[in-house]
Length: 132
Image (cartoon, rainbow, N blue to C red; front, side, top):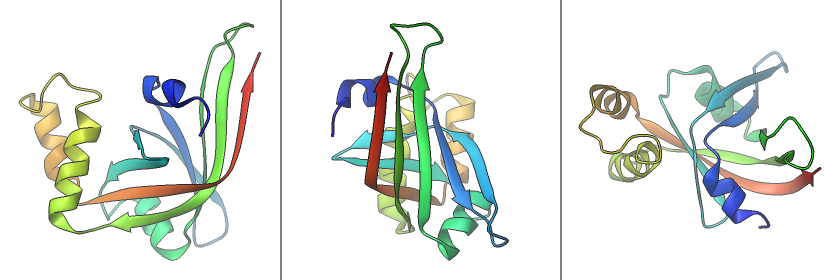
């Protein structure tokens, strides 16, 4: 995938899932990009996880900049699945959180880690990127 450095440098992914009524549900999430896949830690009780359980189609956008030539972005259409195996969830969740915290000793990091019982794995199918 192009722009690997861009994807690894950014911090917010705006994830769109489809709810049971067919409406989009869009949320900003923390993520990790690794081996051409995207990983998002969450909890099975969240709307995004429930939506993915019923419909694996997702889309997301990662972008930055408000003035040319610093406007850069990527939009992805893909398929998502929930990783539920405890040891894999913990390992991925720790890696994701370490992108945002210096270590996992922080109260907020511990709390987020304890609440993460699944990880969303997104496999891109169509990628659109831009730079202005």
